[in-house]
Length: 178
Picture 1 (cartoon, helix red, strand yellow):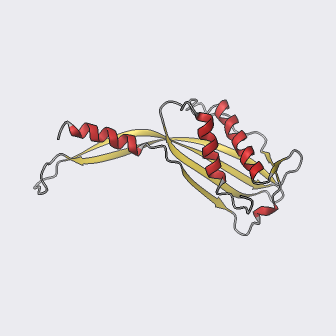
Picture 2: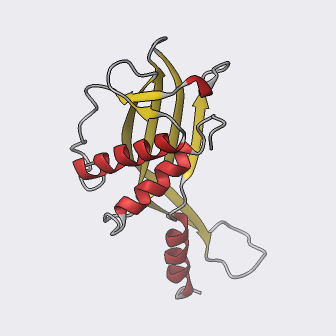
Picture 3: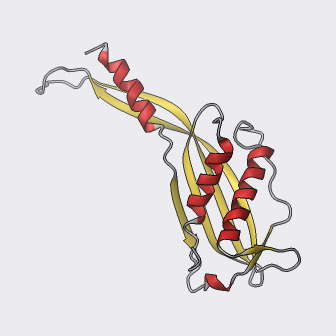
């Protein structure tokens, strides 16, 4: 049992730090999203964070912008200079989380005292938050969020993963043109 436990813990950690993307969105009620035909990026986008440059860097920020622009094009909303219908911005959030695992070394079903052991581990959770503001009303009308556990090293296919993540987030955008 003692030899199997470390293997179990390793498998559990590998599965709990899976690559699953959790996507959610929120929107202002009563907005007709089909009215939006153009967008532009907000001036003064935030700069890459210094706390985690492996994930939050200029390359990934450029990839996110390109992926959002491609999805907006698919939705029929064109990029425009001047006075667009929507102003877009995004944020990259990287949080360090702690999780714990409790296990029992007692080999029988009946026990007279507790011998539970708890172990904890830390991991990074990354999120992309996309905001869309109605330019005329100056009102946040939609936000989409995608979150997932991050590996310790950047993936080799970062560009493809960012495209898939942004596509999943933008799939929550409430318009008839999907």
